[in-house]
Image (cartoon, rainbow, N blue to C red; front, side):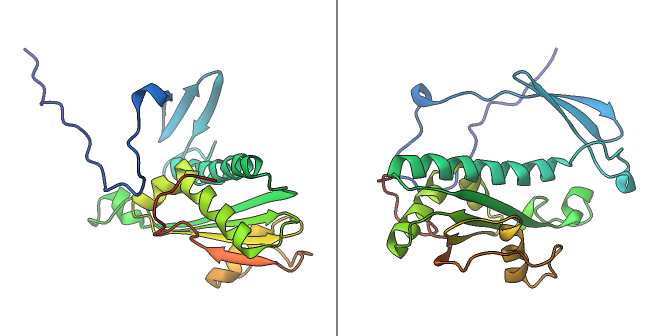
Length: 217
């Protein structure tokens, strides 16, 4: 005879939002994973498939990014599409969006050698936004609205992942501008050479952090 523990509702941190989610307004996301050996998983969702793996040095086959690397890439993609949608609602012209994630993860958590959080404890998400808009108030309000609406940003922020969202606005974007800005801010030697980036018209960090919940304009 099988036994099971009573169903427990998931705990929720105090919300920074003024309304409660509604099932009637919610969508469902599904993904199926199959272990293929040596720390590798084949993931299927909708009509897509991809491989999640680990480096050979830790026992994987290095045939795909790691789970946390996929997560970092998803954060980049999530805030990009959110920025595009918020800009469209506000009538803000965009000429480019570049993002870069740099995260720190204590390996001892996953290895079970220390009782530390196994996910990111420090995360810098750098955005370089190209736009002809130069008004600082409009740009900060845009950044705050994007942060407030972005699912991935709020997931990391509420999880205590040490998130900093850094924004640079200029008339245009160039290749690797977000990466260079991130490395410079953290004191890392740039992986690539200098880029011909225009002078920023406005920069800010964590535009939505601590902001009282409000509807997007």
